[in-house]
Image (cartoon, rainbow, N blue to C red; front, side, top):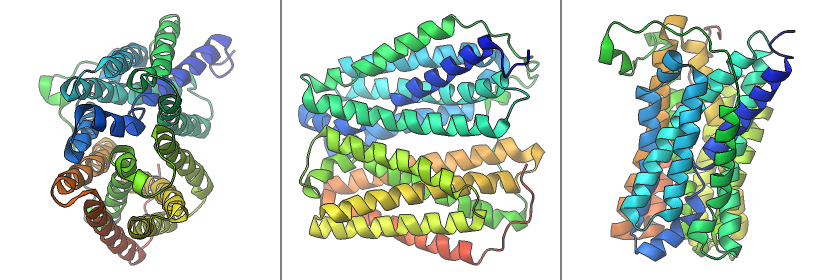
Length: 405
């Protein structure tokens, strides 16, 4: 009986998927709760931005510096450790008494998120070795999208209608995390052969960053900056949008902002699935134009406070977010030779994660000085100009001739 049909492997495959979903569920769970924290602890917009980016910085550090843990110790021990760490982080979030303790919990969750995504992705590939690799890739993509989207939806709905929302919103993730930890320790998976220790010592932990050969540098930079824009736009909704949504729509509360964030992620995954057969150049151009339109609609909505415009901006954000991410990673696959794939992927991910950090920090700082609405207009103008210029550059860039793989 092969690995793709063995009952034990199927059971392990299921629990690795569940652990991946539960692990990333806690990452965006706090997003609809930020206005409640802002009121409870009297926080400025810049402090809300710092709370959000603490998670992103920790996740980026894990991806860059701890990505080799799975190669050295196997995916299952790293996944177990990641799920334990994220459950501890979520528990501390529920018990947080001030901004410093909450920031510490977000750092733990960010570190755990990077470990979980890396180890579970490699683990699913190992458990289905010799099987359908495209099905495994689709499983990973959909599981991540579902988990990331489920967190803010569940957290927002619970916080809207239960007492002690800054505690009760985290209870489902804590319970599911404990269940996942228990299930993972019951799995008996034969470890894959591990790499020999690197003689270079601590230098082997440093990230390898690079750019492709000059003819392919331009499309690679366009794809990386498209991901930067997509991550920046989503981070706006995940961090500061709950604070300004009460001025844009007649419905208020954590449930509304949580559903908005979840819808962006769910629709982003759906748009990626639909656009998979498209030519990469078309995907990138339409994704950038989608983000451009989303920012224009959000600026108009800031001035008119129209629920229809807000819904349209959410829809176009999901469209642009999905296609820019799909196009960006497709470009990396096309331009990266085997010996440079790891370093080019690290550079791409670093650029994308910086998009989740720098624009939001800048907007938070501006909001303290010129007000949230004016800061939003500046943010949207900058992202609109960036995506418009990138779309024009992509239109004038020849189709990549390098084969994928």
